[in-house]
Length: 117
Length: 111
Image 1: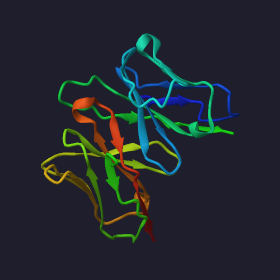
Image 2: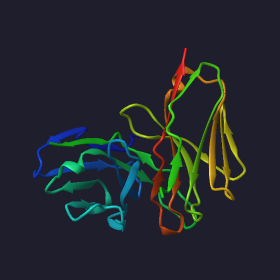
Image 3: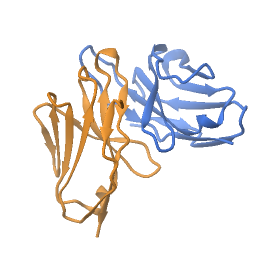
Image 4: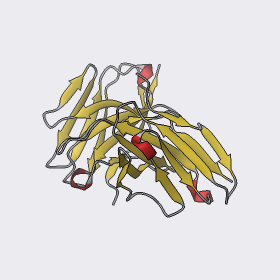
């Protein structure tokens, strides 16, 4: 079974430019999460999709970040315009259906390493 | 206050040693607990879930103390391949299914 895949693996852009990250979850997983790790800090939650709906976007830093999951399959995370502090590793994770009172294991993709110059 | 606190280490231990990692969490509503392993420049991978009764998987033993909001991981007979960063992960409980991560504890097993 294919795991979570992310594209690109690395991206180097200049401040003010736009970057779009893509995540393909494990087939059949309804839940898709985006996380970010800024250098020296812990991995932090950005948002959670259940199928195509945003379940929780409380971790999104500001309105320069836009996540979509049209059709409930792959997801994109766009940063526009990028700022220096957006540099870090962006991880995507997916899990199967979440039932009330339980938590499914989240499987992580390899991450996209974003560098904003 | 951080949601999950871990000692970042580093822990440098000889092969065959036993090593223990601890973490504490702040949200008493958290329901699920995990240890993930992360190799350098790789994604986090699930090592084991942590249950209230404690659980063991080979050389690895995880314990949960809900009253103290404390989680532990014990590694026996350390192997060189155990060298990695170990992440303590706690779910958000009532507020949803997001994960809260500790900063990770770095382990190096020395020949």
